Length: 403
Image (cartoon, rainbow, N blue to C red; front, side, top):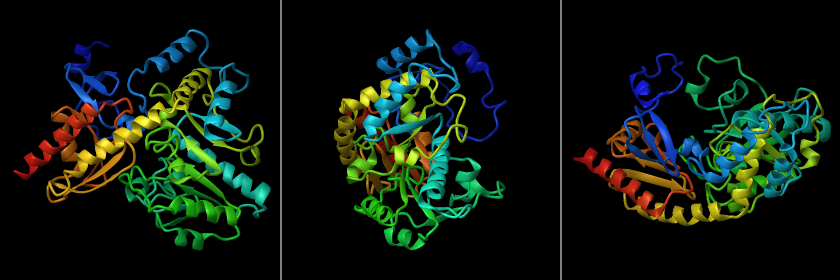
């Protein structure tokens, strides 16, 4: 479809209203920048919720996709393909684990992790049939399937979608004592976001993840880390758990694993846990397809160099220093890890949505969450000058709102 036809097409006339996007229609991207139908360029400070960690159109990822498109794209798991095992081996090695379960979306990875944990609980731990429970945290966001929203504390995600899936107990995020108190003989796992992204880039106090790892080890339950947004370089490490010196039993990965090209997700763990699943008990027609495996393998190769983790660390320091100067100038608080920041705007000044609309007018695309909070998560290929531009535009928006 040409740009002229896109301009003439009604926006969202034939789409279910499950999103409320900003009024911008994008047609191309290069690195950390995107272009709309009118030819205007914007700095992408969302990176598709970290799915585009390596930038729009990364040459290595596009080349991997092109080569595989010319060969074969889908076989189903009824047959082997020559891309899947090399990808699985590379990803397992990156995580220091034995094996993976390939899926497509982040929510599928979470659902798969839940199934693995329950099967492990019954078949290894010896929990009585139908009695397994999993501990989660208040304020979590793991996806929007029925099972996942069953343990969400966001009423907008839950309203009119019941009845809900049982077997989950939610405790305050960041409170290891409350988590331990919720465990009983039928608890099989703790499912946790090392950083709560949708909640506004909420970081727990130092030692929280280490405390969870200690508790789960001592109580013989699994620690499942949802690193779908926080993992794969975003916070200055391969996984956010690395920043706490913690190794969970299962990593849940997605978003950036597909390089912004195709949906790729995975559950990564050791054979003594993942090996509880047998043929026919779980699967996906597209999960582990050769195109996804080829792109995912190229993503792992990029991460294996450590370059992107280092960029996120060093540029994250630069970003945080710049943002801190806005506190008291319309910003109430800032939370950040690597190239990921949650910025609380004074609610008397504007909503997060309004701030994002004004940023868009100035050439910066960001996303609001929970009222007056906005998030910045630019591609890891962003430059220091790009970040300075973003912060300058935010400062100008805040000055405009205060005037």
